[in-house]
Image 1 (tube, rainbow, N blue to C red):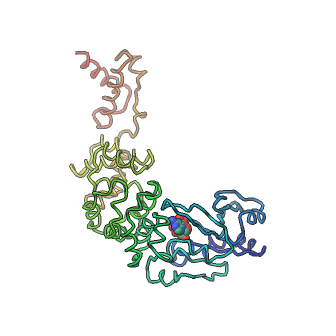
Image 2: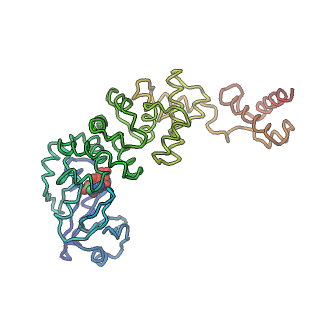
Image 3: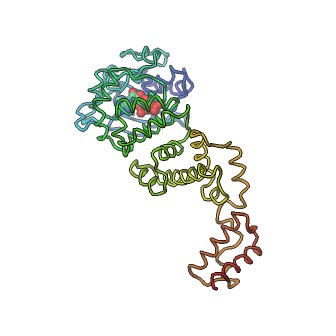
Length: 402
Ligand code: ATP
Ligand code: MG
């Protein structure tokens, strides 16, 4: 068993000793069998939430209404969810009702794909009620049960299908793929935030082209925010020489670029609709602007390097590399490090100095003179020393007064 499972073993054994069943389930079992690193360990149990809480000293109700209790053990937290069935799904996205049950089979039946419906005991024995192991071996994504019904229950599963195709380099089985095609429009029922998470995972997967091709062939992309008219952009993405991205910032930068959203305003508007964070919007906006300058001029000016900042520069360069005009990251970092200053607060004079030497009076002129000083330092025209800058400021102020 992987180390993360070994660490959780006492939790499962405590539950079993009390006469209940407990298993590792879902993505962590799938990834263990594939030999991939685990990022979360999910435990499913026949014990009801109150019963779980009775067995451990310290627990937190992280999602008690749908059966999830976090067990705290030796400084670690383990999410344990009671076997449950779901029913209702009148809104194509979540069950109207969750019912706790004692049967593992019922719990596995509600899961999305056969490869995600595997359970594992602490002995390492795998419970495989839907032939998930053979699909895992063959690299196949197959809905548990009737695909059409499963996508009606929760339309997000269609996005999860294309996401796993990219992440795992798996084929989507024909009947499942057909059901995505037939039900694609239901994706509009899903909260943008949930669609976004799957879209980001798709773009950052090991074979994004597989997920993108499935998005294109099923037409599912048309129901993603602001993507209805972006078939050509997605086809360009598919046609690029094999690429791999490592950050969400570079994924969105590449997407903005290929969908011709290259101005600050259009990037912002696009990302607002996708409900990304303001930090991401700031980062991607800077990266896209830098990318445009890089493509136009082959390199960036000191001012552009300063304005962009190292993080967004790194993103722009990762995307430029995918597009065929990147440079070495080491060179980029060296050029950035060689800038005279990296933040406007490093300027050797401030507004107070200008007033003290009576170079300006309080008001807009002060900001303008300081901005001119900052530009002069960044471009290497004036060195960042108080005396040199005061001379320069005097010259700027004088020329303003004339
Ligand atoms: P990841 O590696 O991204 O965590 P995962 O498969 O573990 O992938 P989670 O969202 O962590 O995804 O969900 C854990 C498990 O819960 C899944 O493996 C699957 O069995 C089940 N599951 C999650 N989301 C859904 C869904 N929308 N419909 C049905 N089952 C789901
Ligand atoms: Mg998971």
